[in-house]
Amino acid sequence: MTESSSPYIAHPRIMVLGVQPSTPPFRIVEIDGQMVGEARTVTDVLEAAAAFGIKVHDLDDPDVVRWVGGDKFTWHRH
Image 1 (tube, rainbow, N blue to C red):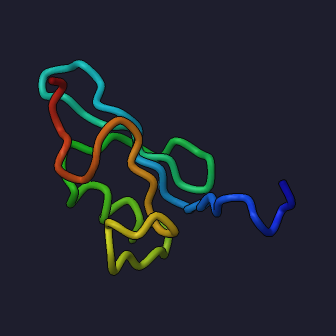
Image 2: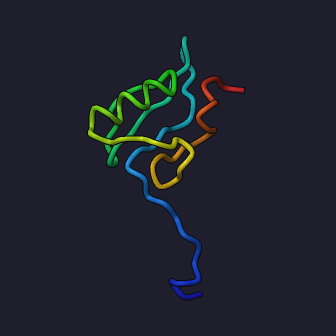
């Protein structure tokens, strides 16, 4: 397989990791590969991005945010 025919993999600056068991549950937020904090809501993710000068217009854009272990609606373990 040549590089041009391989699937595109986004490398967004923001990564939101899976839900961590806690009371209340949270997700770890990484920006540029560094852990920057915990998020309990989408608003927390947006605030973290803003603190690093990142404007997020679409939370579903894989070039902007990678959601690991769920999506922007996943805030509790199932």
